[in-house]
Length: 441
Image (tube, rainbow, N blue to C red; front, side, top):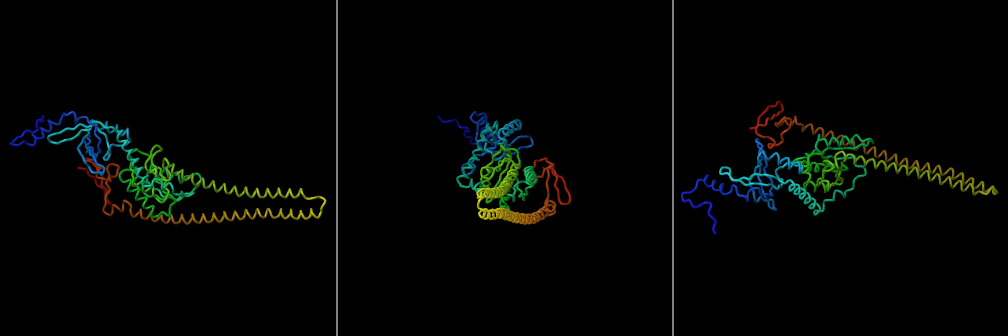
């Protein structure tokens, strides 16, 4: 039986408002488009001043091409509840690019068109998708044959020249340096910081740029340390990236990763030569490596002393043995053996002394060579540090402002992107010679 037409023929034509009204009457209230669970990806998510959250729900095919899209909204009364539900379950803030399972109701307004309202969200789906993406990255690294490459590099017996990838001024970097420089054994380490942004969209490009700079001066370092203090799980997502993980896995120096807390695990932890739980633990690992080497040297020294003592002890036993075997009746034999015993008594201490002197000379020469090498390295690093200091002075914010740039602050925070500002925000613009204020319209 043919279905009745939604739009009967109207020779004179319909007005647009009447046309939209018929669509509105036909769609709104349909049970099959109300409270439906839909899998989609959030795109262009934004929060307005009234507390309403607007986004687009999109679907992509295997080639990344968008094949479906619809405008969506979470009204202010429901947004805070869903925000906290998602954050508590996943440790992340609901944001653009996330794949979600949401409960939606479709509506049509004759003026604003079709829109879906998000009623609820299932955080467990997003968590499963994140883990799936991580496993796909690990599988790809394994298939490409690079996942264990950095682990197979030999770690120096005493890694002392450390290239550090971290954010300057970060608490994790400060903890690492305090632990390393304040070690109770007086061990000396030579460090160089390669600054990178350690959270957000700039994490991957800046960390890879820092590794590229280290690679250009690879002969100056024994290993690389990538460190970042703890924080929300969402702040560590950038380290679950294939390109960054592949770069670390194939880096020509051993890489030590200390990111987050003990409970946090990223893809970098699977590919690095050494994974520790925190920046402080990275410093402790380096210190322990050096103290183990010192203990080994002490063991060798003790072995030399023990060998000399055993040689002397055995010689004395031989002397006592020969003395007891000398016949009292044969004077000339006694005299002959006394001469031989005297020779033994004279030569054994001399041999022992010569052996000790030889070993001491070798140790002294090795110590001198080590001191000279350390002095040369320290001088070279001091010259390089001075060059970096001069370069930092040239690139200081003051000089940058004098070249015509300006520094924008909102409250006590620097603004680095337009998306951080909202209408009505008050900002301070600092120039080289003065500052001014403005309000975002």
